[in-house]
Image 1 (cartoon, rainbow, N blue to C red):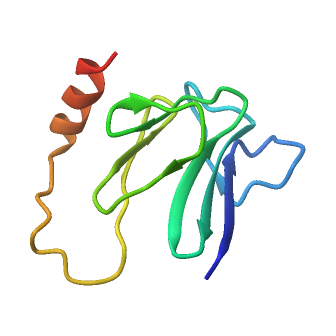
Image 2: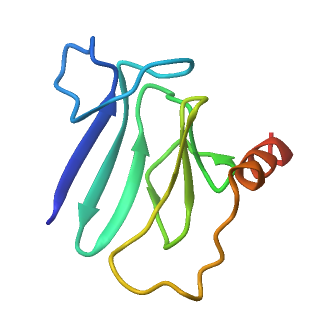
Length: 103
């Protein structure tokens, strides 16, 4: 379904759909948007948000298998329903190495 999911800290004045806590997490950190069949992530308040190891500062459309890092400790892989046998899964250490190589 189309819409948006707000991510941030529990102590935010504005309702956050998903709560994160820890290093690098802003009260209003980022928004995931699902519009017209595309999912994107929008960082807010200069919140540390990375896609495939690159820090983003504006709305970024996600592709199947993209790695999303929120703050310093939350690692995710963007997936959609369906059969993804062709997708090579990276290990957590691979995602960390990718992040460190682009810093």
